Length: 399
Ligand SMILES: Cc1cc2nc3c(=O)[nH]c(=O)nc-3n(C[C@H](O)[C@H](O)[C@H](O)COP(=O)(O)OP(=O)(O)OC[C@H]3O[C@@H](n4cnc5c(N)ncnc54)[C@H](O)[C@@H]3O)c2cc1C
Image (cartoon, rainbow, N blue to C red; front, side, top):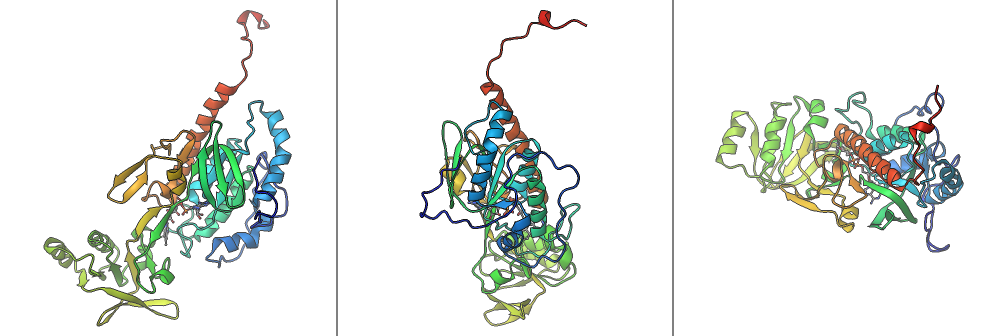
């Protein structure tokens, strides 16, 4: 059960959801619940969750506690190896990677609890691209659909922050802002943070007029005037890549990405103009990007591509003592191809361990990790299953 703080010390339900609290549910007979129609306007997915929580799977820890209480007797009767833990798997992070893992584990009849701040990396983007079958879908819509799908398999989702975790003899203990969760396994799918250069206007345009990924947004800006704002000498390569989408690319060296002679020559050969000097701000009018201001001039552009510093949200993994590997993009927690970290029972998937993982890759990695976590649990189930007397073939009834 959750070890909740004593009354009056701040167990505040962030969300109040009505309806069935869940537990391990059998797959629904018939179709999944239909999503409500209508545009998705909120840029803060937590608002979206709050607005729809009455019919969704998002639960508070308090409600989940109730459901756990109700479900426990049934669970133990169903599985004699059931542990006195809150759940089989706690997944921290409910983005594409976390929800994809939750879907596979829920369908494998595992008890799964997702704790999610509901601030996915692409939350400011109105549309998501390059995701087969969902090209152009608002990214928050994908997650809303995902939460409904996992709920159909009894996965419980909580809006909250996981603030620390520790490994114990029997499993993993995760402290959230509302209480403690104990699980047999943890999957950390907390994504990464894009640390933007301090350029006034960039933050407010992030996801619309200012973006990072050519494969996500290049097509929408084909033939447009694309400004590439350098954040390092490597930004020259981003400008060369974007030339694939437009022959009107302008490279803003921004004092940190001055091209060397060979690079300047290569940029010139592909008609990529270089603007030197520090970028002072973005020029925005009525919420729309119009240009890039340098010290003494403004250069009109239709969109800005830039390269933020990618910081994995890996505090939980580091606090658990997971090994890291240093590379050109900094220090990242080390995982094998299935998402296994150096710490037993601790797994990580998606952008928190792979900066290259777009939505499709994150979905795939989450699914892959879930499969191996389930296999790991099966091994533990075998080890912990009570010994039974061996059945002799001779005693089998003959036909
Ligand atoms: C502006 C922008 C546009 C993009 N557009 C596209 C696109 O069009 N197509 C595409 O394929 N990719 C796109 N991406 C990339 C895409 O956002 C990522 O590939 C994807 O979000 C990674 O999924 P994830 O599940 O690993 O992490 P996320 O989606 O970031 O999800 C992580 C979740 O974990 C939660 N979390 C973090 N820490 C905690 C904690 N301590 N406790 C509880 N919860 C926590 C977060 O709040 C979040 O909800 C875009 C990225 C950006 C920045």
